[in-house]
Image (tube, rainbow, N blue to C red; front, top):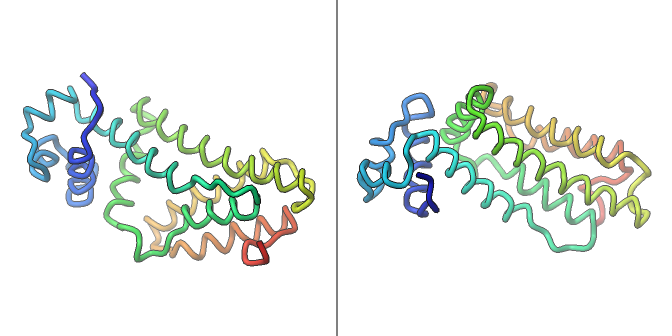
Length: 194
């Protein structure tokens, strides 16, 4: 019985994930982080997987809002994308990044999670592809294949998340690699004039 999740339930899920990680997350631990009872959680979500699927949808909505950029300049849109992806380490919650990695590890077994992760991947690729195509059309970027650039950038982003969580690598290291790739492919540096 999936229903529209309340912000309180989504925030409680976030806090419970940070505190207990994916492996030790239970409906009771989520309820403990909110004013909602375990029974009330089960009224809205039959299973923990359904609740986590709704939580992933909630995160996607927030992420898409951070990626949104109405600028007509494709350079500005790419910079907004990079800013949203590579926020500074102080802005990030390491415990949550680790918990999210646990959810991602379940994607081969949970089709709902895999579909949500595919949705994020497609959104990121679309933002990059559209900005690159617009930059080529306006003569701001070198003539390249936008799909290939978008796929490569998103692959670098996804790999950087694994390195960040497992190796403690700083996000700015991965951002530098993505920027160097964009400069090589597009003939434009994100650090350059927008």
